[in-house]
Amino acid sequence: MNALPKRFFISAAIFALIGMVWGIVMSASADHSMSPAHGHLNLIGFVAMAVFGTYYALTPQAAETRLAQIHFAVSLIAVMVIVPGIALAIAQGQEVLAKLGSVLSLAAMAIFALTVFRHGVGTQHAQRG
Ligand code: HEM
Image (cartoon, rainbow, N blue to C red; front, top):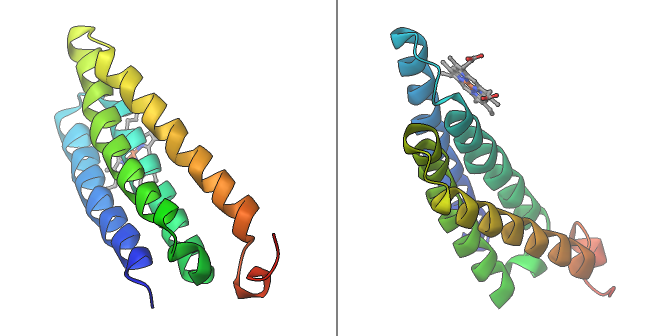
């Protein structure tokens, strides 16, 4: 199997582990102020990355493209920018990183939409536009 689905899943699992520990720390400290950052880490970092990985495992012809490598890089950087960005926005009111991260997250999803449009889902779509 192409290495790309594995890279998405490893990233997803690492983000989930960090996000869940963060959730336990929030619960234990009764300080839920970082809840939106935790939510985005789990939803974009874990759920979206795992969905992307699943897609590329099901659709190997899409995983072999240069755009798929770019998709992984943009998705990874998006999580690593938007999560601290949201935390910074909450803690200090500085929104620059959160805004940049949101644009990167949107770009990752746009690449995903384009890829699904181009390659379909599954190997049976390999020969279709
Ligand atoms: C060990 C596992 C987890 C713990 C202990 C935990 C804990 C928490 C806590 C304490 C809150 C704040 C609730 C509040 O103030 O109302 C929260 C919010 C949230 N969590 Fe988790 N969480 C965990 C895993 C997850 C996972 C796996 C996801 C998603 C896949 C997730 C998504 C969210 C979302 C979306 C919010 C609400 C964010 C917001 O509206 O600000 N959490 N979580």
